[in-house]
Image (tube, rainbow, N blue to C red; front, top):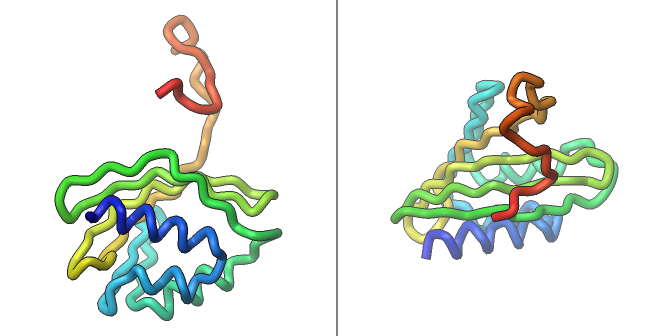
Length: 128
């Protein structure tokens, strides 16, 4: 059930109607980005933050994976506005059949170190 909730949330985010997408969030929703230390509370602030992002076009969300164990779900999602592409790894906590908390990491890509060249290939997406 929790994995399906998170999948539905990402589908709702793809509508680019962030007020609508926030209906997947618990009334006491909390959001945290460890890399910047930013924290926000509430559906309204979540919707406003996403709506205010200076995007070049409509946001598209490609879910790469969703794994879950009970009320904890982790998603790996590629996000693009046609100009910028990023990856979000999000830890969701579900409560009362809604997303209560999200801890979200936005890792920056970086070039593979040369010293590992003997053991690896470079791929846009894994074969699994």
